[in-house]
Image (tube, rainbow, N blue to C red):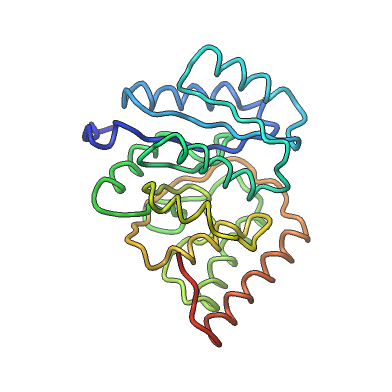
Length: 249
């Protein structure tokens, strides 16, 4: 990894919702520590709620007690995964971080890519979006059905929302604090995974750059309820775009 400018290193945070991550917890933390040690900066916020049934919460609390760079936030009031993402962004924003990166746990996203996100955000971009579908990106070890769902989601966003991004469903992304302020105060309609698509659509007018990422590890099944919500939100913004003034943050 190339050395990152000190202006980037000073005050960044990583937000990671956690649920039933006991099996991959230690290797994931080892990779995060490697990046934080290299940059000599950074704070990680773990967001957990009642969905997590194994020992993940205890592991997070233990790590937070040993290493102050890791902060555990237990939010039993969360109703869905979107609440977890927003709560994490709000925690990082309220603590005054200038750059905030959102990523998944369980080794789905490689922490080593954090340096690329910081570099892009330090080069005049307001947002940095991880993409599996551009040159240098990939998606492996996931069921064919889930890979097709991710690609279909992006294609539908391009068709109905006029998106120009190559990947509209990835959850690896980074923002400057003023963008996060807009995100945490916006009434998202998504209740599940379509949140990522809704967010990227709303940020389409900001200065952004897509970053090639490698998505690994099997993905959890997407429920019919989540798919129904995704279609509902997609067509809401489609009709807003066609009949009214298209929304954006």
